[in-house]
Image 1 (cartoon, one colour):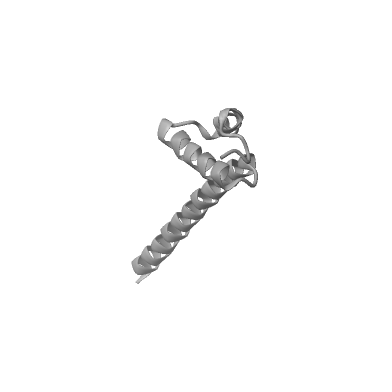
Image 2 (image 1 turned 90 degrees about the horizontal axis):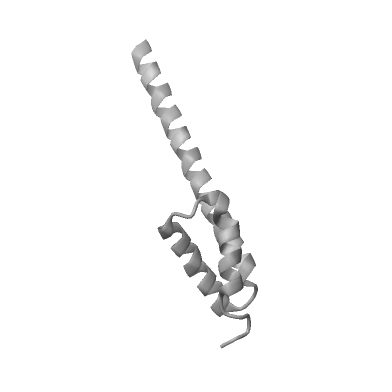
Length: 84
């Protein structure tokens, strides 16, 4: 029966690691979304536009360490708050 104990410990450990990786990725996405929305301000049109730019950054493979500067640059070129 010791082999079954090792199997149980291995499965539970793998599941715990998978859970932590999943939570880490989810929190990181939330932080990126919050960054994009904070750069957009309160204008709903601009907020939607910034979320689209965040999706574009992911498609283009912008590195996470460069994401803030990239979003700030895009936000400076984006639609003006209150315009529309």
